[in-house]
Length: 611
Ligand SMILES: [Zn+2]
Image (tube, rainbow, N blue to C red; front, side, top):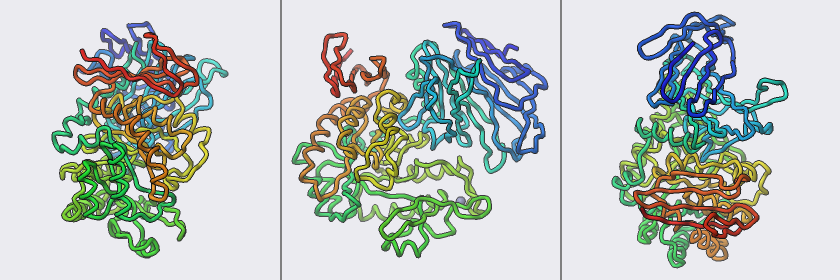
């Protein structure tokens, strides 16, 4: 049965199974779906906007009963777009719902495309790719997924992203021995109910690969107001320019050794003496030291968070930390009434257990404590930990119940409060709903793959695992999806347990990723060996940051694998009539460009043009 047709695509549905077929008219390729489960066709209804299928789904959560669903299909808004809505009784208590089904891509050159941190691709035929359930916002950091092959690709955008996940799965396709990796969306209940109509927007491409997918999402994000450029943010706060081309420096030494305000001011001044023009100095507490570091033209920030709460007795053990909220009344309650557990600090005094602060209560405390502190400590920057890390959750406390969307909204209010102060705002890891009120994300320069317990042990040498070498610093699987969408909207840095200088043998390679992606390095260094190592930091700064500054406000318009082994890669940044092309050689061989330029192993070239 025909669903609809535009000049770009023709969509049909096998109404008996619910499976779609999408013909890409540019190439003749037909996208086919794999059945997931439980669908029984009842009727098809043509409506003014498209086709509506009425079907029953078998529900395990209903003891095997059949539950009526409506599936609505609309062509557009772009010629290669298809919108799919899934609806059932909104008040109905329900478990997970699987529709639309996965599109199959059976091709040796095919890749799944996942916006996990900056972005990764998994070969569809790679049987080492793990089955994974990844929450939208938490497992993936923009609400979309896709797949690309030669002259083909699709993106699925979650238009209702807050109660959803993706499932990555390996399945046999057409014959038992032909295993392929697929992705499909999973709708989850909101506080136990279906709650609202769920909506996906699919878009099909015949050229441009994952870049075209990211650009389709960028257009969508701009249209719904999820995008705000760094130039627009600069108008709200002139200090934003101090971030563009600045490395992120945390004065944290081995084991968080004690460090005085004099040490910090000394380090900042040494950086300036050595030619560091811009710097994000991420941790200072003393009002006078804040002023001294600001005088150098640097951003001065502090660590802050409204997520982890420790019972008063534990706080006493921790040594007099001020509680961020009240225990236990401000904590998130699970459906049975128990407290949601949070961070578990591993200290010499023992392993402690934190509990999650409900974002509604966290915002309440932040709205009082942040303005109060800023009266005496004139920071120009603030880093809020956790606020855009982890996952979105629900709260079942009777006084402050929350859906996941409300969870997001309260967290956004904390960031907005800082943004409007105005402060340069940083947040942990990254979720793209926060883009309008965040200037830098600590963690988005990297991938989801980190060293073991990277959040607990920030500076110690841990030998890189095979997985880390493959996905975190390997050139083959990384693609800058986040930068293709948001490079001109937010600055990405490494995660602090995955900082630039964490593993000396990989420092140079991480610098190369910063150069290629136009993202910021992060250095963690304590006072104890600062003088011995400051020249190494400055060398890295001078290698990376002038290039990052050059493209700081520019859109990343393309990324490509220049060689089939992915070891030579190229990005292009466009800012008005200025175009910057960056080619990086991650390989072991000299690479000679089409223009005859030689790029040595682990080196790069930058070309600037004006049109
Ligand atoms: Zn609550």
